[in-house]
Length: 361
Image (tube, rainbow, N blue to C red):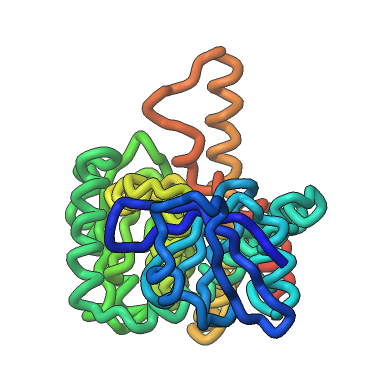
């Protein structure tokens, strides 16, 4: 088999058109394409005669672009006869994978399959890989790393969502005492009180074992047992590290997007926006059910009626539903209180949770 190529000696800028002959045994020889050529002399040809095709490094094919073939003496061949080079590669069982890639590029079916596999891989990574990795990572992060993160989240929330609590010192002390006596781990959890017209009746668990309870929820609850039931649910989020796992999942998602898009800013933006994610994204359905399960088991161990948690959810749901109806009847909506800030907006359906709680054994 023969093909024409431009020979570059690798030491000068000179080049020469040559004919490359590949024998059945794989030996390679060269000859001048034009007998009258003076650019490549006989002595130079003699230095590249005893070669076999296996000694040559053939560049993978990219469409119909010229192909480069590197010789052992650092000289190179440039050829446009890609089909013939492919035949030689296949004949001597070299570049099989390169040939497969070239055929794939020209097959719409293979391109579609590759795209489908990529989409499934990304979906699987986001749906299963990231949660599993975040769960493992959350267990390895020490408390001295979580404390500054939690403090940063509190500062962000105080600047954007919260106002100082209007509850009396006596009322705050009553709830704190009940909370501490119930859990008997006051050294591990910190309970803070804030007022927040923006997010309304709410309770939030932060990565540094801090729970923020809004005045609106305290005033809405029918009794302190309902408040304690909600706090038990929030402790469930802390025990299972849901907030931290959520943040890690979002950071991992940003890293995946950077990998596929090359947009480094997506990672830096996600990291800067982490405090807001705790509010705007909430928890997944599985996280909420897991926190409910923890609260129910804890309440059962403490002899508390599980209906306090169910009733607390119903009261919260009725309150927020009433607010939404009021907004619609007035044809207005408070821009400072987006729907994503509602306590139940990112939680599973309230009626489903209430039913599961009341059927819990």
